[in-house]
Amino acid sequence: MEYPLNSKSASIVWGLIGNAHGLGKWMADYVEEDEDGELTFKWGEVWTQQDVRTSTIISKEENSYIRLKWDVNESDEDFWELRVEKSDFSGHLTLIITDHVDEEDVDYMREVWTDNLSRLHNISGL
Image 1: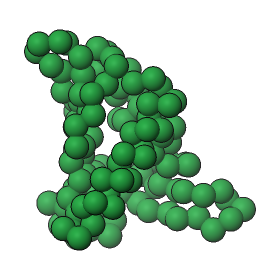
Image 2 (image 1 turned 90 degrees about the vertical axis):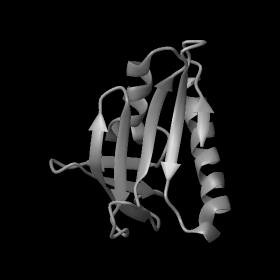
Image 3 (image 1 turned 180 degrees about the vertical axis):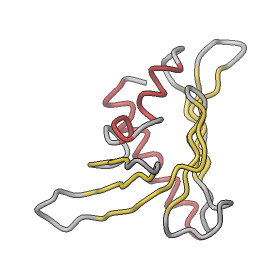
Image 4 (image 1 turned 135 degrees about the vertical axis):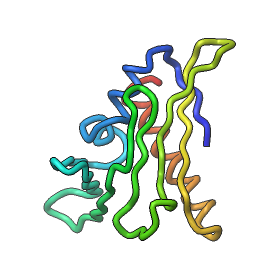
């Protein structure tokens, strides 16, 4: 998926996608990162039943991309990635989301990312 951003500053966008604090503002209710580069995402409040998933950072380049793998995926080829690219024409940035999912899950995951991007826009104006 490609999502045009209302920003020309990669560092502002990176602050929202490149670390647990930023991801916790729009992608999950809580996101924590440990010293090994493992992110724990939690949806729901602590006093209710929570959905908890863990993702390992495979690679990242500041102000450019972060590539992660959910703990349930065995292969490094089953990654998800958030990448920031700048348009040579307008100078504006685009967030490119790559998420390897099974064919039957494509529509569902597109809805999930659309909801996530709506929250990103609401909290940041991007």
